[in-house]
Length: 356
Image 1 (spheres, one colour):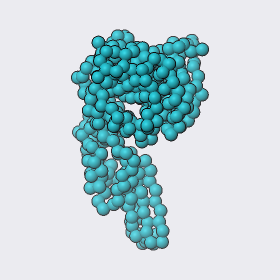
Image 2 (cartoon, helix red, strand yellow):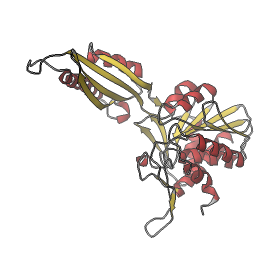
Image 3 (cartoon, one colour):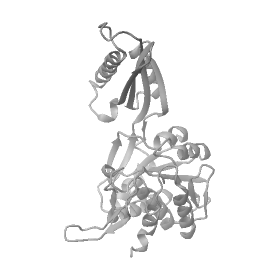
Image 4 (cartoon, rainbow, N blue to C red):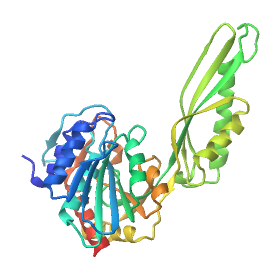
């Protein structure tokens, strides 16, 4: 039997909720928030779980995501043993990112309502796909401060996530006999890819930090033909630095490939770098130290719901949450329960500092 202090975490992880199938987990979390004494808890129009504590004019939103990648992992706890000092909880989403979301839920319940403040905890849907939950939330709130839930370890605060943009580049050529010696669409596509890669290498040449670089990926290539035409398609992805907006990248990509067809795919998001000198960051540093930690800042190469809401809200924000992000999406996903409890205590101390 687990301790009551882990009931939110274990219960939430036990609700299997891959993107598009979050309803059961959402309803469970809303019921849990009500049982923990939240002033209000409900399912919003986008299907997000929302819990509200307090009615003051200053608002702090704690935004996590309740969906996971597919691949159910039996939920189990491995207790302390001869080679392990802390118990581990295994289960899909224990790290990415129900651990952070559950820690938000428990911390706000622990701190309770504060004069002049309102805490809003949100379990957003669809983060692992197109962030539909966060896109809705971005239009519904205008917080004074925001904490985004992603695993970064209990003693680290993330101050930035790279942006991303995806495109299909299609190269078309007339059909020719294979003995003609003329360049095929597939061969031309390889030349186009090398041009894109050369530009990125040139851009990165004087950049020392990964966060400041373009990170290019060829996600796939396919080619085909009919009686009159042949074509090849490159599936190109890039992680963007703060200095390069998605529009900047698409413009440059079209310039590099010349007359070839560039099709924008999915939702592009800009990179975001948080302000380091803010009341929120200072409160987190104090909170981490209160639990015996040595605070560290990190900048991540992936994207998160931070990239969706921060450009809209334009308020001080950070990304925080327990768990080792190296375990994201793996069949071995698990969270250290001692670290989880430390994260709850760090968040509680941070909220007390913010509102004191």
